[in-house]
Length: 310
Image (cartoon, rainbow, N blue to C red; front, side, top):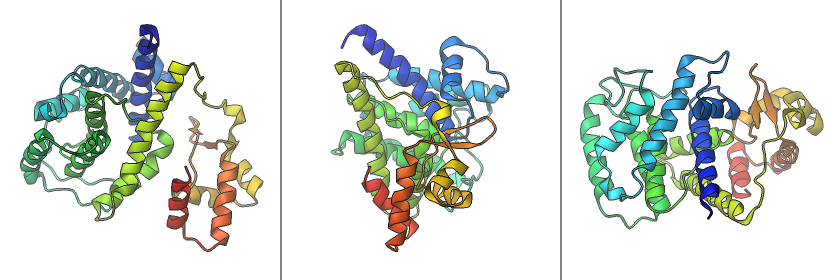
């Protein structure tokens, strides 16, 4: 691939990974605002200092990750994980940056019970031994498993998800794969699939989600190589408000909200005022949900069928 094209893709992934990873954690900077902060060093009116730091810190942590890709996953040690975490929280929570937690923590809205802080050092030592052992796992499964194990240990007070996603992508890039982008629209499916595995269920949904994320990144490189234009985000005026979507399928707003909360519909964009906007494609998705409901499928069964159909 031409050097200029590779450089352009590298810049695109740097912004996109920063935007999506932070958005999953609640950062309200838009994609364009993230690009301004990361690439131009500009500030965005109405956004907090912490949100700006989350963007610049993640971009710097990603630069550190990319500097490690000539190495092997088995060479990753605790110092690299701690360095990623320290960079992520620099200037935000310096007291805890790069430090294992010494207090109990809980995940908001989750029933997952996290390890006692006294167990964290031993669990991280075991994690390091596993990571440094030769593995016969497929590279994508190895990266996904490392992410899963780290967030399940939850070794830090804050920044666990961002650190785990960066670790996962470091492992992927070390083995010649592009980084996996967990899209903002996939947030609920991503969190639900993790929680399902953490509470004794199957990891299948989680592994499929990560594999699809890598597949999309591979497509981005292939389309760039072939000169195929990537679909641009829809202009806001083409998106549907919740009331418009509800009217088009003959349902009320609360039904749309319920489906969205349950992971059946994805939000294309959220306005600064907090209004959720949907892609026109959501109309067909909603009609499919109605069709499956009429066939007496439960919401969880519908979610599974919709996922399988992607």
